[in-house]
Amino acid sequence: MKTILRPLILFCTMALIIASCGFPSSPESATSELPAVQATQSLADSVSVELTVQYDTATIYNTVGQVVKFKYIIKMVRNDLTDATPANVTISGITATCPAINTVGNLNDRLDTGEVLECTGDYALTQADLDRGSVTNVATANVYTVNSNTVNTNVPTVPSKLLTLTIAADPTTYYQAGQTIKYIYTLKNSGSTQLGPTPPFTVTSNNTPISCGNADATLAPGATLACSSTYTITAADLNAASITVNATASGGGANPSQAVSLSVSKVAPPAVASGTTVQHTVKEGEWLWQLARCYGTDPRQTVNANLQVDPKLLKIGMVVTIPNVGSKGTIYIKSSSDLCVQLHTVVSGDTWTSIAQKYGADPGLTQFANGNVMTVGKTVKVPLYTAGLNIPLSNTTVTTTPSTTALGLTVTPNTTTYSQAGQTITFSYTIKNNGTTTLGPTQFTVTDTFFNPATFNCGAAPITLTPGATTSCTADYKITDADMNAVNIQFSTTASGGGVSTAAVATTITKGIAQLTLTVVPSITTYTQAGQIVNFAYTIKNTGTTTLGPTQFTVTDAFLNPSTFNCGPANTTLAPGATTTCNGSYTITEQDMGAVNIQFSTTASGAGAPTSQAVPTTVTKQ
Image (cartoon, rainbow, N blue to C red; front, side):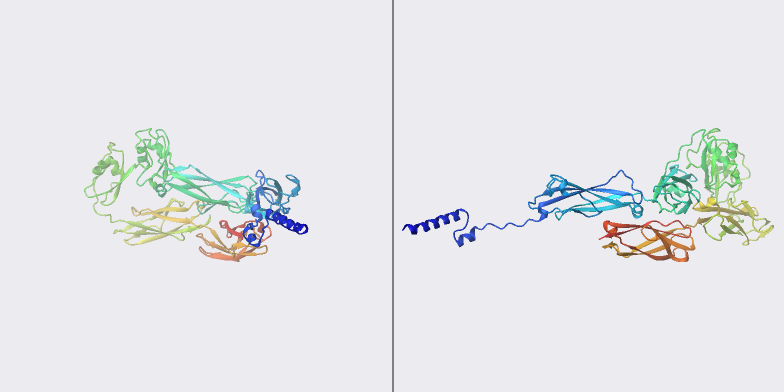
């Protein structure tokens, strides 16, 4: 019995031990009591990495070969790994060098939570970096095969050739037609190498090129060069709240500067103060003695202050000097908008006295100012603020029918545009007897203050013009340097003969604009690998008003090799609106693969026209 019981007791004891250790005592209980299977955690669930990138922001990066030192700071935000997985630290972007992991923290071969590893990366600047104006470093740290955040660091560079422009105006406001605004343009070499002496420095202001400095001018880094232009306020400008000038600078081998705009605002005219000297813009019908009365000053002083002006040829828009305002009487004109002479349209029944009384003027002076000629339906000049002068009236006969003598003038220039100083514009004049009575025999003349002499004979004397007959002549005008600084030349011409004169004929000759624009079309806008080729199609267009060429047009882009190359045939002529085309290509480099994109900046030149606008083209890494 004893030998049989011992095995049984042992078996039961082992069964109890197995049950107490959590093992099932039967197949049925094994099925119901197995614990749930845990999901396997990824490394990203256990590891978190933070990356910070720094560089010396106090350094000015402006030289090829200059080194930008990047510091990569890798912080282990979390590391829950319990095994001996190697850290395997790598950094994308500009190549980095890292110290051994056992040199930081607790000096073991593991990057623990809170430990920081500092790596460095050096990058030598290229000419392309300077021309682009920045270096972009896109970096991501990878530790334990887990990526950190991506850091995009943009390091600004100073191009070796950079031209910048500022504009100032004197004065900064305007209030009357004829007022002159002086624009001062300051060009600055904001790059790191000398600019110039070729091509010469030029400012293009509202599509008008202005030479800046001597043809051989140079600009050292940080140096400036100033030039100016003037603009005369027009009657149309008085209807606007402001006028704006838009300008760019070019020359010296740099790309064109940034576009700059400056506005000059219209303000209320200042009140005329007693004892001051004012500049008055002549309105229709005004003459110097009457202006002196309106400003309360001495007429003789007024005439002497304007010896350059023929009192008999005072024209609308002329600016005259009125000295010592208020010294001889009341100041009636308080601002440039006030009238000194009123124009009155004659109606049947008008007399010099009735017209003068209507406007508070002296009848005798009103009669004198109009040569005692009053025609129904025509206008007469009424000198305001003259009541009480008591100038005697003479014969007061009023003509009630239109005059039977009339003279007409036609002015025809051989061109309506000009492009250079010394260019000759030939004007043809035709004087016609539009009246019903014969004029002459006499010498007919043409008068225009832009010519020298201002008055010249038209046709051989003596000439007799029957009704409808004509006589003709020509005169040449040479474009001056001053004309090249203007937008246009406005001629005002009259003809006289046989005791009658024509109305003024206005003729405008506009300065032609030499202007190029450039269009750039890349074959692709993204790239994926070094060695990939980007083809560019370039179209140069004459968007000015004058023909350009024949010449060799060129395209310039610092990223291409060569940076400047011919575009189109060597003897291309571009009429306004015409184009010429060419192609270029760029091969993606290993360095480009470390950048976010490549930013091209392309210009076109030729025929002495201002360099085209810089066209930006971006090709992005995919």
